[in-house]
Image (cartoon, rainbow, N blue to C red; front, side):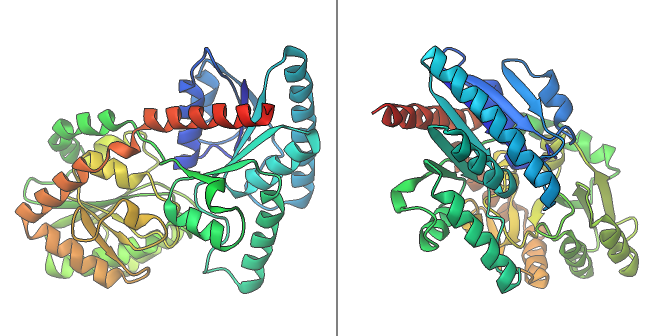
Length: 389
């Protein structure tokens, strides 16, 4: 069968990396993969170099809400899917459209409906609506999701919290979604641990200093300014601490302004976009994440695989990876002072930090990337068989 994955801009993020990994590792004897995405993004070069699946780049398939571009993208996707439906029928094969995240999910599922695609799957990597939006905006996005949910054969979610919310909002019944964790290449993070001291040296971190870091796009969802505020709080009690932020984005000016305002130049280092994330995470003493909403971020299992303790805000699927007091700590969203207290506690107790990291490492197997692909393949086969019946 042929599986067409639809996602917007290939930025450096979990949904995008998972999609490319899935396409590159599908069983070639059973599946033919195809990617439809925007032609820009940090991962486009990786997609172009990959073999084993087809690619189509649509300039109109943008992440932002742009009515004219969105209409063009809808029409283009419908034409693509109609052509693929016709070819699949002529070959006696099944066609599946698999969409990712909100924007591509709405356009892709609508186009699949118009084209008569027999099996349509949507992956929820966190919803496009959240409690921090105005009631009218949040309500509008939920309204759109309810419409396209009717045209969705099945849902995949990276967290049980997202499934529970979808059922509560009437997007699908309890058996209408399957939990498949966002997978990572576990061994790459385990192998990075022996390189830890060399990476710290390259970041100019002294042997006597502790290192706290966050890996995230600089956008409102990830809330990176709170990381800088946390750093200031930690330094009052643990002055021998350094901080790194790996990522970039629209909030970089706000992050830089907060660093300057709090006099943290030389203490908080902005690394920009990095592809050596395994090395960066392995070099940390504590991984922090200040996201205000999430599905279940891949940075949690990445830190777990590297044996690093985690401090984060308690949002959505976070408790499904971070057991409070077991492999890290969770605090209420926005409470960076409480998060800072937890970081200070970990930095001051090496034995406790090691125990937290070891416990995380023992819990990470369900996040294996190859397990993610095999579970998706099983779902494809099951849904295709049901469509035949």
